[in-house]
Amino acid sequence: MRRTIAVLMAILLLALASCSDSSSNDVPEVLKLGVPPGEADPTMMEGVEAVGVLIEEATGIPVEVTETSDYLGIVEAMRSELLDVALFSPMPTVLAESVADTETLAVVLGAPYTSNIICHPDAEVTELADVADHSMAFVDPGSTSGNFIPRLMLQEAGVDLDSLNSTFAGGHDVAAIGVQRGSTDCAAVASLLLPMLVDSGTISDSDFEVIAESDTLPISLTVIARGGLSDEITEQITDHLIETQAPSLLELSRGAEIVAADDADWTLFYDAAEELDIELEDVE
Image (cartoon, rainbow, N blue to C red):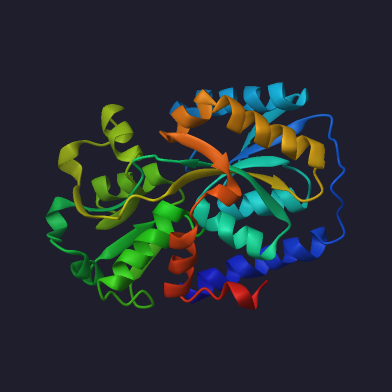
């Protein structure tokens, strides 16, 4: 975990160094909207496109949706001005704001959003502490429900994360399929995605058992902007999403309310960073 976080911080620090001289006055001809792997599922892309339409309505600028390979790719793409706005996960939002020139515009609250740890029935895992003796797939180094929160759950159950036989699957669906096929005994998966995977026939209820579920996460999705993007544009996006309560964004994240970043409770995520020994103050 410490090596993973070190890599994360190193990349974000490069982003900070490269963006430090940017001014908030850039008005691109096309706004590029980035989508990380947890949201880049084909069944969800219609909702993402609808969010793009809302942003276009707010700014009057055409929006182009771009799928990315991982959360770190979002920050790197923003550093290079290849992306302007992105749908993001709350935990990497905290990290990116700590060390990189990103701005959180709005957040979605109220989703029945948890992190689940699932295991194959044949693995005979009955409690979280048992995962220490099995293989475990996390989703992505920057994923909230697919990495940070499940790691915290395992650590609190007494599992030594440094000695855990673990890997990154790259996506929530891939992690769940890994359990189905037996390539990993256990995996972390966002609760909202499990029923979607079952309903689509990707996996079945008999392929897994939910061993543990986190408390409901207070923030399900964030909308962030790169440094240097025009203040007028970021204000237009923020105001429009909050004033209209963007139905497509709420539906996409199963949320109940869209608020400004300062009106959200980030305590859980800062507490998780502290418990996982991520020293945010050392990289600010």
